[in-house]
View 1 (cartoon, rainbow, N blue to C red):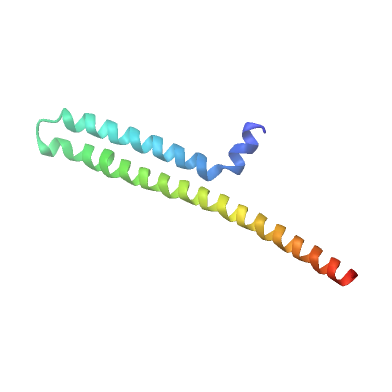
View 2 (cartoon, rainbow, N blue to C red):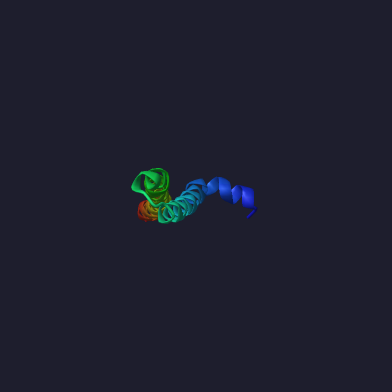
Amino acid sequence: MEIGKWLKLQWDRVAAWVCIGVGALALIVGWVGVSGAAYMANAMPYLISGGIGGMFLLGLGGMLWLSADLRDEWYKLDSLERSVNRQHEELLVAEDAR
């Protein structure tokens, strides 16, 4: 499967990984900034941008990943339902033919 088609089909999973990666990077950058600050007032921008922003992106990535997994489960359930309905119809036709 070509990469463009896969990215289009799995957009939420790709977005989840991007959010998780950027969120982890924001946390690391925030931690490095806070560790170098001598005063709490100098550390606040790092805490706000790196800490809160990073946690938000990690949470968003987790929700997107969960959404992708739920979509896969719904697709599998729909496939099973179609299979059961098809077999049910075949049994009804075979029963009527007797």
